[in-house]
Length: 175
Length: 440
Image 1 (cartoon, chains in turn yellow, red):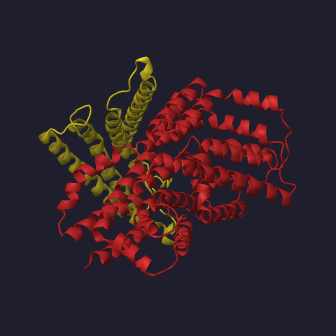
Image 2 (cartoon, helix red, strand yellow):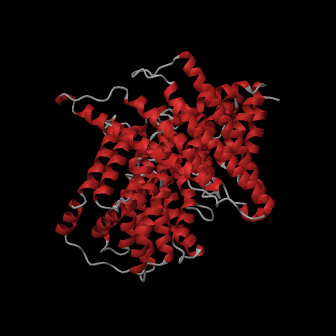
Image 3 (tube, helix red, strand yellow):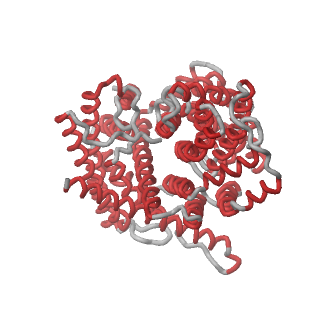
């Protein structure tokens, strides 16, 4: 029970953090647009607002990955589910979860190397000139949590095959 | 093995994976990554690509509208905006025969103008309109058909997430694409209302007619939703007027609907958390598909399959209209089991080069925009096609008292309406392009 509530809590709070960051990004955009509209009154848009919004929303999406993984939000085609029968479904689901975990681990691993590259070459954003490694660095934590969540859901899926009981929630299959 | 053979094999494996319920995004990611490994003979190119591609996909400025539009839709639902829209539409249409069903379509169209997802529209409007339809004696079949079809207006009427993705794939201007979607979206809403009128004409027992509301009262009720109207005008006017980028419009919409929801008292802690978790879940799913499709399409480009396929199809010597019709029918069929985002991401890289080589008597840009709208519509018909349309599942899960058979029966007249509209838009490209030609 301890592990599941820990992973669930972590995924949830990352999602809230991502939501908050996203909202900050949209308020920043609104302020910038208002500034642009009232240039005649001496206001001005926020320079490089695009870049900031990009960095913020990139971080937010990374923060959203764990909850989607945990709640099985990834869309599937369940046209043949009934024909496959519960045993085969659990087996295929376990394989999917394992591949997903590998993919999430690879993503986190490559992101880390990407971060090291950006740090080494000191690449900066075009207008605001902030180092690109900043957002990369911020995304590392949610990427690691996503990989961890992938391992956790694979363990549950393997457990489902072994015990014949569904330990993972139903797929949500949303558009 | 040639690149083409590899491309075809990967496509078969991909479809196989998808149909044994491997998540679509994951299937594309895996096939793309393994395919690139095989075709380049080394894992390094794809691994190096992955150093940056995840972050750059997730932080794309164009795609940042996805979470923002989702958030906006959630705020709009919690803020009671959907209820208000329905009341306003009922005021104007309720006294006609089938009026409450028509009002549902009207409210869906309004909601669609601030929401870019058809599932969210169907779910929200089912909550609001279904009790009202039931109370006024509408059959389960007509109610379900109306809500399923109305839900597709979420994506047919701009802003639309699918169109944004198409714009980035086909390198077209998003504002122009939205402009082209406007008249077809309006025609869809009118077509659905006409369908309701015809159904009610055949079954006069269907539904009660509400007393006519005087115009003064109608206008007054419209004025009372001024805050919603402002968000409407800002989002749509901003995009069409070229004053906003879609991202800016979605940011405005999210903040605006958030404020309305808060001011109208619909936003407590629990609702806010639920809105964020929903947005997180769906955004992550969509971005993972975008990432997987990006990888898969890079592999396809390496394999030369899209170019070769285009040449092959052209050499078949079929007329442009025949090829276009085959594609649309294919979308129509695939649109049932596949989700629209993955389907567009998979097919456009192959179909788009073919379409652009055909002569429809339009400029290249016009062809690209027109084709985008046609694809959007045919994909959406898939969403309401029995037995696997997604919107039907949504309604079924929310309206337990309506049987599956009733839902399937109820949606048929609306599919006929969709098919008729598609045929008209195919035959007369100038309808879709009218506003574009007027403004540019």
